[in-house]
Length: 151
Image (cartoon, helix red, strand yellow):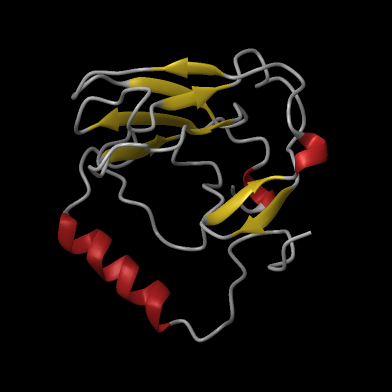
């Protein structure tokens, strides 16, 4: 979920499991073909945010098991989530988001621009300075567009 300023920014997420993601330990569930629709309303839930139940796709999601180190690419408007982890182990993964650095990211903090045509390389110290500047800014920020209470 991103701030409205990024509604038209193509953001691709790469989901990388750090252990095998299986049906038992909560593999990814993806609703294929739903990326062309509008932004779906999200509501607060016990573990963060989820799509409002009345806006969920009518199709069933596809379970996508993945081996440790596989990479799954997701469009920013593709509904997805994890199946329940029924195992005794934690299922670790990484989410990395990619987008045109000239367009809004939908996040109120600085990203790490590693390489672009305008700036061939960004030093970590430059990113850290930008991050410290954002943290020092006293203006209140709202990260999400929907009310915090669950509906």
